[in-house]
Length: 370
Ligand code: NDP
Ligand code: GDR
Image (cartoon, rainbow, N blue to C red; front, side):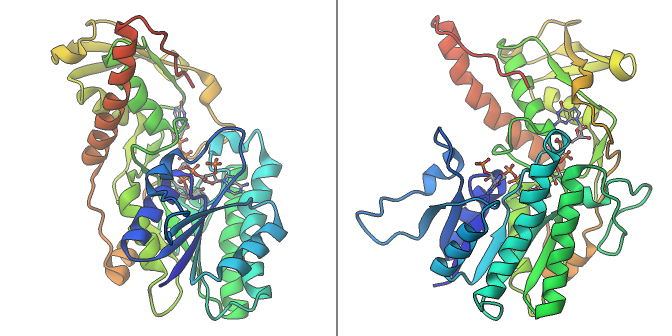
């Protein structure tokens, strides 16, 4: 039975990847951080009671800032594959916590690679590094591929640039099977609540259900190549199953503005929006509302801009060219953007229908602004 060690198992991708690897018969070891509250909601459904039988899903306490912990875990598990998904993954927050981000996202990657080397596992253990389209940050005007030069535009992207190159270096220096998946934005119902897509689908669901009046966003003009996380974890797995270790861009090849993502989400509840004004003065108003289950007053202002969400340096356009992955890995996404928006909206509507019931029966329902 193959063993995989997954850092970031409690995150969006960690949860989908753990499901996929368990389906494929792996024993999955996940690294979770100690926290003062339970933080395993995304993988709780995979948990089995280890007192009753041998289980294939195991969680270990750990942190990418702690080398000795990483070395011990890799020594204990002796994994065939390591997926390094753990990271401080929020671009905006990386401007507030640049040093921590460098330590975890940059040096954390080195800690994994060096542990594999020190433990004499370079022939046995394959390493996947979660690289990102943010590496292309300032590159404009054409689809970004494996040969496009990088131009990081945030402390997060600069830290991930180190992670990218140290992975390439360990591959070349020590002949390790170590690869970068350069993944463009991927989303899902499990997406963290403060990333823009999930923030939008949560807010639109709540507005439709009468639980919230409006949503505040930042830059509406940014263009992102959004795919579904379920499709992208399949690519991660495929990247580690090849004869030779290589780096791959994983993307859909379609780019869309934040504004259009908002429109598509409102359309899922039968609401059409129009936008008036520009920059910080832009606002979104309801033009029509056709679904009686989500009746929103025509003319109501449901969207405004809060400059707090602007970034000191923005990434205006991301558009990936996934030709290499499609030809060499035979990878093809199953979801398009419409399917992704539908999946996220359906999940959030179901989630907040519970709050609506609570509110109707007089219970306090908390607001979820951020
Ligand atoms: P999430 O933010 O959902 O998950 C990040 C995971 O990393 C969580 O499990 C988190 O733990 C864990 N983590 C954070 N800090 C540490 C630390 N110091 N030590 C160990 N673990 C830590 O991210 P995603 O699942 O969306 O992304 C997975 C990876 O892919 C990340 O590295 C991200 O940067 C990268 N990436 C993501 C893309 C995307 O569009 N989603 C695109 C390209 C790359 P906790 O739950 O306790 O916070
Ligand atoms: P990103 O994702 O920075 O691309 O990084 P995010 O969803 O945070 O932002 C996408 C774009 O939307 C704009 N935006 C807002 N963003 C947030 N979070 N909140 C808002 O209110 C808002 N309004 C507008 C942003 O300015 C940006 O242009 C994600 C992360 O998953 C990274 O870890 C990963 O590496 C990259 O995707 C690829």
